[in-house]
Amino acid sequence: MLKKVKGGLRGLLRMFFVCVFFILGLESAVAQAAAILTVDELTWDASSGQASVSGDFTLTSYTGTQWRLVGLEIQVGSQVSTTSLSPYPTYSAYPFTYEFEDVVLYPSSPLSIGSTQEVGIKMQRYFDFLGGFETGGSIFRGSSTVEAVPEPTTALMLSLGLLCLGLRRR
Image 1 (tube, one colour):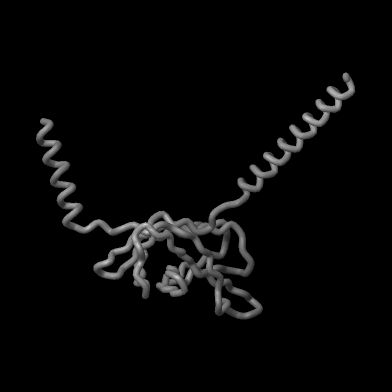
Image 2: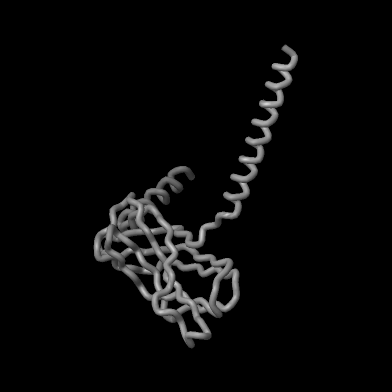
C-alpha cells in the first residue's frame, strides 16, 4: 500500500512539474509576441463616406538598408481602399515607431458601425543590390471596431446639457 501512495505522489509531482513548465513556456511565448500595427481608433462618417484611422506602427527588426512607409489601407470584404503616406517616412535604424492620427480614407464600400475591419500599413524595403526600393512592399495588418463620428449637433447638445447641469448645481 505504501508503494502505491509513493507512486501516486511521484505521478502528482511529475504532473505538477509538467504543468509548471507548460505555463512558463506559454508565458514566455506570449511575452515575445508583440503587435506591430496598433489601431487606436477607426471612425466612419456616413454622410461624407470618410473613414479616419489613428494608431501606431512599431518595427523592431528588418532586412534591407532602409524601410519607408508608403500607404495605409482599409479592407471591407474583398475591397481594399488605400491612401498614400507621402512624403514617405523613411527609417534606416530600428526599433522605430510611426504614429499616425486621423489619416483619412474613402473606402469604396461603406463601413458598418460596430463591425470589425482590417487596417493595413504598406512598407517597402531598400536594397543596395537592386539600387532602390522593392516594388510590392509588405503589408502589416491589424483590426479595429468601427465607431461612429459624433454629429456636431449631438456634441453641441451634450455640451449644453452638461453646462446647464453644472450651473444648476451651483
